[in-house]
Each structure stands twice: as C-alpha cells, then as structure tokens.
Length: 133
Image (cartoon, rainbow, N blue to C red; front, side):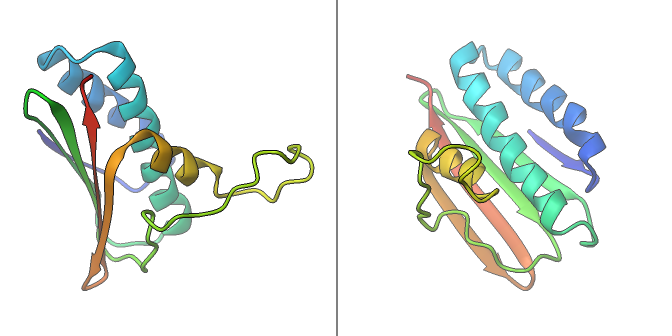
C-alpha cells in the first residue's frame, strides 16, 4: 500500500488511519501495529519538524510478506540525517538532566529490524522491517 502525506503535523491522524487500514487488511496483531505506529510517528514527525519547508509530500509504502511488515518512508528535498546511525542516549539521567532530542530515534532503532537509510539527490529513504512474531 502506498500513500503520500502533506508535510504537516496535522497529517498524523491520516498517517494512523493508513497504518490502521493496512494492519486490518493483513490481520496484523495489535502489538505489531503499536510498534509500527510508534516508529512511523517518530520518523514522520522528525521529517516535518526538521524539514518544514521541504518541497513535496512525504511518501509511505507498507508491504506484507507473511513473516514481516516492510516499511519505506521517502522524504523529498531533504538534508541528510542518518537515522540508522547508532546514538548514545543516557537513560540513567533524570528528565531534568537530559538534553531534549534523540530518544525517539533511539527507541525506533531498538524496536524495528534492519533499519536502513539512503540519501541521494536530496531525497531521504528510510526503510525497516517488523517481524510478526
């Protein structure tokens, strides 16, 4: 399934409707749907937040192969930011002691499999897999 979304936070509800439609069609468990929504929300909101004036819509492609969900998110007209690069997050510090940022990408890295990033001709492509079991 493919869908494109305008580059605004107001599109999050449409993003969730898209993932809900996909998970219902393929009878995907609530647990996998939760992780899918969390990862897609984090990546989409980062694209909107850090590239609000980017040209073009953010495109999502979801597919299913009986063992896993495959996700690809494309952000046209973007500067490079490799979400697959490992980041250090100090989870032992209190919220007051931490610098904002980085925790969402860290969570995505821990929750999904085979997180990949490509950047070419000002287009970022992020892909990952979610096993069904």
